[in-house]
Image (cartoon, rainbow, N blue to C red; front, top):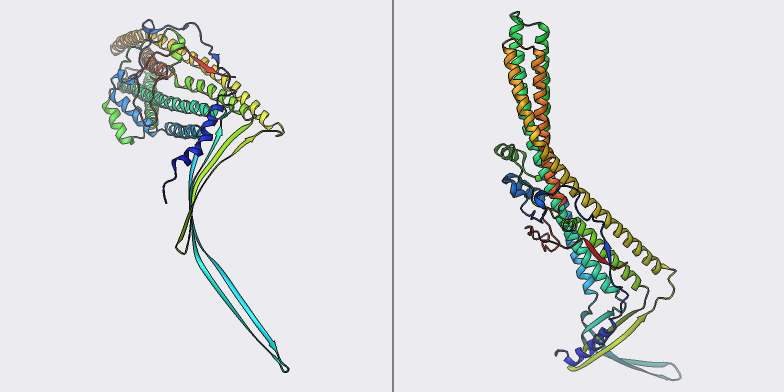
Length: 514
């Protein structure tokens, strides 16, 4: 079969090309600005005066390879990250479908059939005589094989008169970008959760050492007091008090060990690393590392909030809802569809061969909605309601983001200010306990004084560990509230896991149309 003639193909797509002039009409109105409720400046102390800094290498600042390894493992094992990646793939497919709807569709067809075409003839004669009748009949039939081959192209295109298809495409693009931002947000959330679990395990290990030291001290005091009581130098009541104190410390130590074991299992669940392997890694890593200085925070809240992927996703949700309003509104207006086809047929009969080329333009159909019981208007009203909801959620998301950043800044500043006092308290309570223990050993202090001094020291040591844990939480919270190093100009997708450097972004505004 010969190639289809170029002029036939041009004839097919000519009306489709003419329809492009009709696509300029649209119901989409100029976008309006949805302002975010951002304060003029932060109401919390800013570290280092406030220039925008990069958070991309936040965890590496700590110089703790184990933490970086745990975060990477947790991201790979997280079902939330996997679900977010799946939603990105789904949104990407939806965007491709929405974009394809703006273009003509072209389908190829081919068919072949074989049958027979025949003829038949027949006759009869009759006669009579005086005694009877005779008759005879004869028939003749023949058939000829017939082969039919057909091939062609069929095209159809909906002219986007009122911008419905373009609105669907814009909504799909916004949803894809939103899904991608949510994937980044899921990664940031997993990193923060893993870091908090890691710091909790490290704090638990420090508290375990405090409890072990306290238990050893109380056990030794109980042993010496028992010996003194047996020799008659100490009252039995003092010996009983020392034994009770040692038992109390032993119980706290057992409880602390259980808490640390539970904390390790949480890390195992988050990272997916085998517990025995993780235990070896934790044992080899230092139990405490000094937190690095906090990177600078933008002095303008809009610059900082624009770095958050969840805020950007909410912003894109407004844009998507706005496009959906335009699409629903366009559904209430006529639709113009242009179609056409070209084809070639060949008929083969007993060596005879005949070809036929055909083309059609049309039908050019115009569908005008007349009566639908108010369904299209109701669909438009529902889209507008979803738009209003998206705007409300976006503004609430921005308010929450501002709150989280300021809370993290306040907590970080407060824990930093309390650290010096906590260290001083432990140092002086330790000196007081050492002096009281020396006086008790020489008989100048009572067991009650010794236990009271020991209890005060233990409380101060526990408070310092808790403060260190609280400071680490504030440090992680600041990372989380600042977007974890993401920026809206980043092009990373679920197939690209490398973080991009942070850049300054404009104020948190979204262009939409109500």
